[in-house]
Image 1 (spheres, helix red, strand yellow):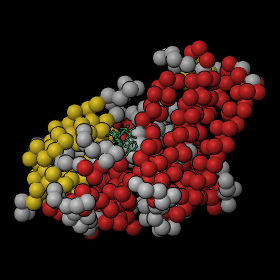
Image 2 (cartoon, rainbow, N blue to C red; image 1 turned 45 degrees about the vertical axis):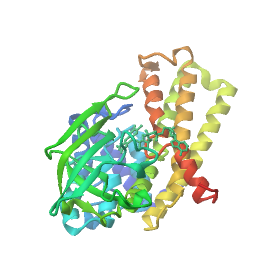
Image 3 (cartoon, rainbow, N blue to C red; image 1 turned 90 degrees about the horizontal axis):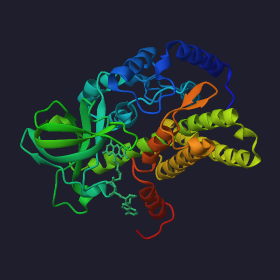
Image 4 (cartoon, protein in one colour; image 1 turned 180 degrees about the horizontal axis):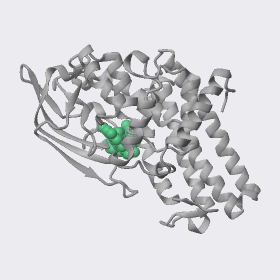
Length: 383
Ligand SMILES: Cc1cc2nc3c(=O)[nH]c(=O)nc-3n(C[C@H](O)[C@H](O)[C@H](O)COP(=O)(O)OP(=O)(O)OC[C@H]3O[C@@H](n4cnc5c(N)ncnc54)[C@H](O)[C@@H]3O)c2cc1C
């Protein structure tokens, strides 16, 4: 969007475009919900075998060590074919954290299986009584000498019912003040006895997440990541990666492409009032894309993102929801239909897309919480 490919990059784009068009299964293109594990993971593994599953990871950890331009090209080309959303908890969230904080044994055990797609990860942060106020979490891990004994309940784990392992935040010191000084970050094999997983269906009728009950679960000491009671810093580093991932312009651009198809099919594309709205949306997404790739450049340069990740998440998810609202508007009287709408032969699932976007201003920390972060850390307002 903001760059012209240099000679090497143009060749890379051609290679990516032709490989994707030959290898991305037609049935996986343009999906509004993430397909189930059995259907999706062969595609993840195909990308992995091609060496493109972790463009942002260094080569010595099994990543592609891609330049910023190559990362942009890969994402743009995947978006061009409306590639499905992959499980990102391992490759985008945990991977960079293990590379930074993990022991050599943890890296050797877990990083290759994230790359290969053999192990799916869930994120165990939220609890029924601890979402926005994450530091008040009560799942506790008691030190039993050679292991921790974990008891508590986690909720809203994306793909929890398909996951093999979970990274989680647990309370290891209940007397600590402030509360976050008593939290640790650990890894748990979800096959460990004492774990019960209950899938939850979302507003779009998609069983995308799960609740986890942990009763006397034995977690080996070597599964602690970072220092004991030092999990808060690890957790927040991970959240910065998560927020950046949710602010990719890819999601909004895909909705814009559908708006344009529907508007062309029903003639609204010639309406000047509609044109104004579409232009305003595209300008906002273009500005978001500039910010997004600037932020990716900061991370690629090894620098921390800081509160910019909150700005990115706010802007990205606001634009996504604005786009889905315009999608409903362009659908006119059919905006509430549960059947797919026809845009000159292409079926478009308007209500699914709209409903699936509602969650975006909640996960990874709600919009209100991002505004609080910016008020405190950027504007210096009292907390
Ligand atoms: C689709 C989806 C996937 C998710 N995946 C995961 C996952 O994989 N792993 C995981 O651990 N969690 C996950 N979550 C949970 C998510 O992180 C929490 O839902 C989120 O942090 C909000 O917490 P809560 O639901 O407990 O809401 P609450 O914290 O109870 O908040 C309720 C409302 O009050 C507002 N509010 C709360 N405190 C304040 C405040 N101080 N100032 C202003 N407003 C406030 C919030 O913005 C929100 O609107 C997921 C959530 C969704 C929707």
